[in-house]
Amino acid sequence: MSTAFAEKCRKVVCIGRNYFDHVLELNNARPSQPFFFLKPPSSMLLPGKGPILAPTGVNLHYEVELALIMGKKMRDFEYKNKTPAQALAEAIDHIAGYTVAIDMTARNVQDDIKKKGLPWTTAKGFDTFLPISTFIPKEKVPNPADVTLFLSVNGKTPPNQKDSTNLMMFPIPELLSAVSSVMTIEPGDIVLTGTPKGVGSVVPGDHIDAGLEVDGVTLPESKISVD
Amino acid sequence: MSTAFAEKCRKVVCIGRNYFDHVLELNNARPSQPFFFLKPPSSMLLPGKGPILAPTGVNLHYEVELALIMGKKMRDFEYKNKTPAQALAEAIDHIAGYTVAIDMTARNVQDDIKKKGLPWTTAKGFDTFLPISTFIPKEKVPNPADVTLFLSVNGKTPPNQKDSTNLMMFPIPELLSAVSSVMTIEPGDIVLTGTPKGVGSVVPGDHIDAGLEVDGVTLPESKISVD
Ligand SMILES: [Mg+2]
Ligand SMILES: [Mg+2]
Ligand SMILES: [Mg+2]
Image (cartoon, rainbow over all chains, first blue to last red; front, side, top):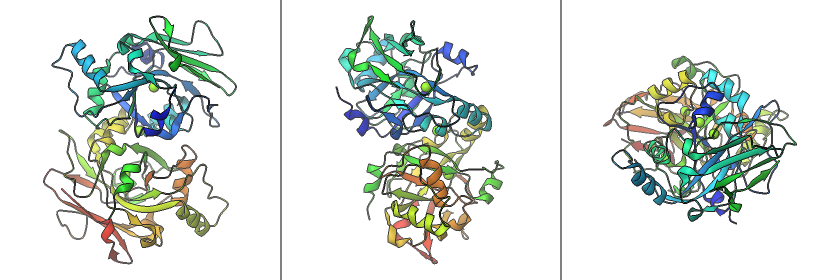
């Protein structure tokens, strides 16, 4: 099971606030269009390379997300004059595969940064703040718009996060359109598509399990198990 | 004159508000410690590849900056227990070379984003928003803490921006310490060190000349000439 994609990646684009119940749980404003930020490739944490490092004084939050590993260049991707099914098929044609990613967030740092109007980079960019699974081949995910993400802390059942990607407010083609209207998406770039409800804190010593279910079955390639 | 460094770069880290007169001209708060954001590698504009693209409705600002092309990995770089000269020498030991960079900024987008507490990514990350010069060999810049940056719009004299890097509020070792306390700096990463006063707007058709003077002489490798 390969992680070679991580070494090739030059840009990790992360969508914010794409699941309505997650917007509510953090008392955030509902976005009228997709917005995004960058995590540095140096924040990626490969399978087996944990633990996640909690910087001193940081309230460390998990956010499980479906991440797209892009296979073809995209610039000004258009979805508006297409049926949703056509737009999704064209988006998928530009995707090489998937990975499950945990967008670790220094929530107290982010809250402070937001108040001051400063960049989110520090809150999102620490080393180890992007645990990822191995490469999930494209054919294992016939419909990325309806698969189930889950994340469980210390074996909790039901999991802390468990929702279908069909709850995205902005579907994948609209996300790729928004990103590629600003910056060219290059092969190897990774796009995180937002987190469903259920985010929360972890402390050193906690264990996180996360992954992706297709038709109720967890894909082995999608599993993350990290302290 | 080489631009191969641009293809190898996986992370562009940009320091904000590092020259006091620039903080004043934008009515910003003076930072108590260095802060930074990311530009995507896809925003780089190589010499001769212009023009800079102005997105519709955007107030496009230039910011000329000295950029460090990193040569060695850095993590938790320490400067506090060293003399300034020692700290600078150790920082330089981790630098492979330099480039002059223009941190193009959608100023109205940035103002709006700051008010809303949203990430700066869109304001900073459009394609072509990072014009760079060719590679400046390290030995051409004996003291990066005292060289002169300049930028002129449509041939204006004196230039719109012209100041020495000795005006940085946080010197290079402190910048690298701040960045590397959050994220590992990897060989090939580029660090923009902030812009001096004199930033302003350009519109399509304007011409920008920028570069770096050492002891009053412009380095040929440092020149940017872009529409
Ligand atoms: Mg940012
Ligand atoms: Mg997220
Ligand atoms: Mg700048």
